[in-house]
Image 1 (cartoon, rainbow, N blue to C red):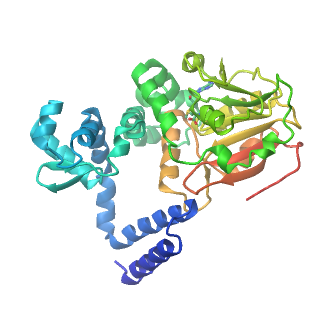
Image 2: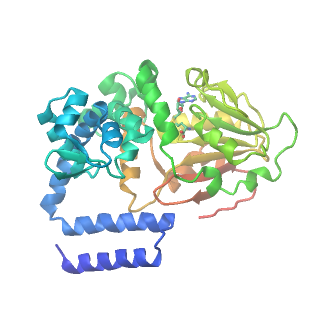
Length: 399
Ligand SMILES: C[S@@+](CC[C@H](N)C(=O)[O-])C[C@H]1O[C@@H](n2cnc3c(N)ncnc32)[C@H](O)[C@@H]1O
């Protein structure tokens, strides 16, 4: 433990908090980074290794606690006095001794407090575990990914450490028999959890149109009543487009939601047209102002992304239409933990990729497109990439 490093980091944290008491998005990200560095500086190397080794049982305990519905119980009944392990056992039907063991992990993770023996009180981190983000996100992502992740080292060994680049022979296909979207399509409950998690995972964060200067699309948009302003491709059940409708009441043109027929068949949202469509087929909506893809390309290897992009480019008016991509743009050095982990997850469940700016540039260039600008609210969040045909509008490179 290097005392000088620790003191320097605590000074930087103090300075960050003092100069920026209500931290900006970038300040917030910097503070988290400093805290991670501080923890590493304080931990002995052995402690770091042990912390990493014992992460999987934490996730398994969390998945079980969500399954048992313990967080909603804590929030409902435990505001003042908390719930005892016996109370929780009675409500859930699980053994008291098991509850004690599981809740020990939850309090160590900071998801509740446990200041008296076998009594658990909710805290501010308990609340999101009772909302779709935690309640649906934890079981969905655990069940979707963990069976494959446990076998990933074996898959990579057996495949001579070749970078997975085929959706149809992804690690998940090998480990479980299906890649992510086929697996979800066969599991009604998990598809519902996935849809709910998709719509909740950016709660409290700015919308893409709060970060991207929307006037770039609004100025010059056709006012013809049939003109399509935006197509949200792979937009799931329209949660993102719904926010756009609420945020922009003066609708600049038709808004179309596209996803697989099974996903959009029941969607009925005011101001939004829905269309069952696979982006592996030619895009039927021609000459829209914007073709919008959020969290789509990271699901797929390059050759599928090329297919999706070519299908889109063929429908675009080369000087009028834009592609808007919302996905991570990984930095070339010191990528964050979540983004790096997501890359491994996307690789596992469908040979997908989180891409750096160089990878995006190369992918887009391979189909005659180019980046016209990149906007980012915070290093921890996805960027917004404006894309045009390579010989289209003038370059306005922002970063
Ligand atoms: C990671 S989710 C992103 C959803 C939404 N864009 C968001 O950001 O919340 C990927 C979406 O792609 C859809 N999808 C998968 N394969 C598709 C295909 N071939 N054509 C159209 N949509 C597809 C899924 O149904 C899912 O809604």
